[in-house]
Structure formats: C-alpha cells, structure tokens
Length: 583
Image 1 (cartoon, rainbow, N blue to C red):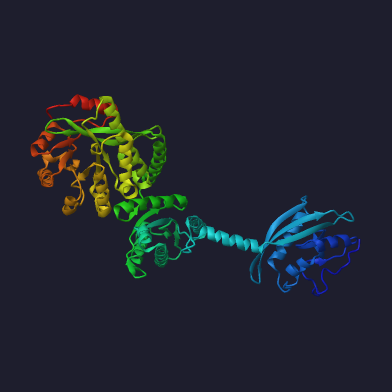
Image 2 (cartoon, rainbow, N blue to C red):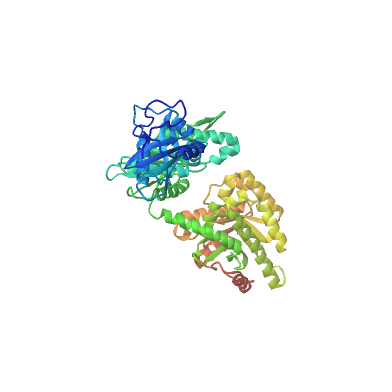
C-alpha cells in the first residue's frame, strides 16, 4: 500500500514537520475518518502505527492550535516523548484503549490535559489506526489547587491549618535532609485569655491579635521550621532537632522572646501570655499526628502549671482516659446512672445529725468506680459541670422530700450542695435552686450552697448578686475549704455567708502541729466575731472531735462519724442518732 504525505490541518499550517519525529501520512479511504476527527470538539489526532513507527494522519483545528501552531521546532518538548512512549506501548499491546494526564509548561504556567488513546478498526494492512484526544483540564486543576490551598490553610493568618500542618510535616520528613540520629519536635502554643479580648474589644481586635501573634511567631522560626494555626487560639511549630531537647528549649525561648513585648490593638496595649507544651519524637518513624497529640496534652498541663511542659510518658493515656470519662459521663447523665451519697454533719456538743453533705458517686459498667476528683475535673473542663450540678441540686432536694414522706413530717435536717465556680459563672444557679425547691416542696432553709473562695475571687460582684439571690430563697451559704484561698476579710464581712467550713488539711493533723491549731483557733475566733457557724472537715478520731468541741467548734464532719452513704442508709443513720447526747 502506498503512503502519500498530505495536508494535516488548516491552510495556515507551518511548512515542514510540525512535530519532530512524526511523519505525516495519507492513507486510502481516510476521508470519512478525517471528517470524524474534525467533528470532535476537543483536541484530536489520528495516528498510524506500523513496524514500530508512528505517523500523523489527520488532526482537527483544536489539536493544531493547542499543540502544533506554537510548537518550538528547535526543541524537543518533554510531552512529545511522553506521547510517543504511551502510544507505542498501547499499540504494541492487546489493550484497546488507555488514558493518562499530560502536563506541560505553557506560556502562562503549567497546563494540564486529560488524554485518551484508542485503537480504531483497520483492515487494509497490518498497521493500526490510533485516535488520540486531549481535553484541556488546566482551569479544573487550578481550581482544585486553590480549593486545596483553602482547605489546608487558615484564611485569617495564611498559615497551614491542622490538616495542612500534617501534610507539611509529612513532606519535610519525606524530602528534607535529616542527619543520622536527628529528631523532630512539636511545640504547641495556646494563647491564654484570648476569649477576653474578643469579649471586651470585639472579634475584629481578636483577629488582629491572632495575625500579629502569627507574624511574631513566624519571625522566631529557623529555616525548615513549620508554623501552623491548629485551632482558634492554638498554634504549633514543627522543628528539626539535631541536638534534641536543647534545640527544643532554644526554640521555646525564641517564641517567648517574640511574644514578650505588648501588642497594641487600637488604643490598648495587650501582653500576650501563652501556655507552651512540647513533645519530641523518638525517631523519624514516629507518627507525626501522635507527636502533635502529645504536645497538645502537654500544653493542657502547662495551662494549669503556668510553666513550659515537656510531654512525659503516660500523659497521653491520661488524656485518653479523660476523653473516655467525658464520653461515658455524658451518657451517664443522660441515662440517670449517677447517685448521691450523703455524709452527715454532726453537731459536736450534742452528737445530733444537723444535716448531710450531698456527694456525687459514679459506678460505670466499663470504667468501674470513677473517683469524684477525677470526673468532676473532667466535667468542669468539658462544660458538663452545669448538667451535673443541676442533677445534684434536683436529686438532693428530692431526697429530702422522700425522707419527709417516710418520716411523716419535715425532718430537722438539711442538705449541703457543692457549687462549682464554673457552674456559678455559666449557669443560672438561682433559677436552678428555685426550681429544685418548687418541684420538691422543700423549704429553702433546708438547702445549703457550698461555694469556694476561688468562686468569689474570680468575679466578686457576680458572686455577690448570686448569693443575694440565694438568700432571697431562704437558703444558707457555706464557704467551703476556708483557709486555703485568698479571701479578703472585708469582702467576707460584706457577703451573706452563714457557715465557714475549715479545710481538712488544717483539721486532720492539727493535734501534731501547733501552727495548725493556731490557724483553727483564728478561724473560730473570726467566725465568732462575724456571727458565723463553723464546720470542721476531716475529723477522723474521737480525740479530734473532743478537741474541736473544746475549742468552740459547733459542727464536724469526717470518717470518725460516718463515710458518705446511700440515701436509705443516711435516713437510718439520722434516726439512730436522733437526740443522741454525746460525741
């Protein structure tokens, strides 16, 4: 069969070979197929393959404009070899079709084409006809790239976000220079009191603060470090550590120096305080996400300690346990799986039960017995303390109501309910107690709200309004753990407080410590001057009970009298000690 050269495209096609290495070919009976190629809306070309050689048969205008018109005949473009390699490979195989993406460097940047290769039926000789099409996907790829950039970066600071941070770390680990025995570290930074800036100056000021902090942190980075904003007011730094801990400490100092000077927002200067937690990899095979979680666990400890914290073994397990407790506690509160235990408050001169302190107890089928110290701390951290506090108030009032029904008349006892400072700040506590009293039918003077000194110090004016509202309900107010905080005596005198509870740290060992005896005497004298009742916590021996009674303490509480007990046992305990005469 004779192969005759022919015109490939429009009349203004260049003279000479438009694509180096390709021979233009004219095959018989091609008129119809050439019309098909011309009708395809995307770039298309018909190729002929025989004896290992490719030649060009026909192209449409789109193909000509896209690939041939601007072709540099003096150079050998990379995509030329890519076409040749893929077409020859497909033609020599049994496959009927193939697809791939072609990328080339165009006049305005990288261009992307979605290419297909398919064999057409040809019966005239042993050669094969191949149809090549290319769909321009450049705009799609640019859009995808922009969307991906938005997904992986923080719109406010232009730093990588949490997902982008992970990808940056993986890229550095895979492609960066890493000397032998080198490590990487994650430094987590939490801006303290950031919410107060938003509340007092507005969200625009908060955004400006974040942008300024990001710029300062970026200025403290070394070459190769990565800074990211991984949360609302949380930043993180990935860093290569050739000298282990010493490098990490050096970076932390640079961060502290960068944030050391105040930041001016409008007419206000703000000093940025932050909590910093660090975690170091054991080797380069460590999971980066795991190291980030360890750094975040360390920063939570730093927020409590006020110091830079380095992750230690077990911290992540503690964080995972706190998460489990939070999840299970949420379920337990929804399903009513918690109970109240009642520890008696004893009138020391007579030995009678004056009331009970209600204490939450939790027995979980998966976690077992969970200590109140543990789950209350988790509740305060997670915000569940509001729901927990409401449950305790309602249940304590209902317990009094059930005791009254069993006895046939109101018992001469009350119940003390602990209030968390966080609940006082976030919840409508007065409304909560009003509902508890109304639903139970119990008089207000039989409920005592126990508050801590820290709850008053945090917001004295708000605390004062709350205590006044509780007094309007005829409730009693007790200051718990007195002596361990920083109460101002003037404010103590002005607050409507009825009872001081001496902390067990002063009581339990006071007989062996003259200083603690002096502290207890001082508190008793202060209470007498202010006309307040006093309850001593942590009484564990008869000797302690008699000593406190002799010193003039009116009420006591502790294991010497009874441990916290279920509701039914507490009622029986009161009946057994009713009109009891001696301690």
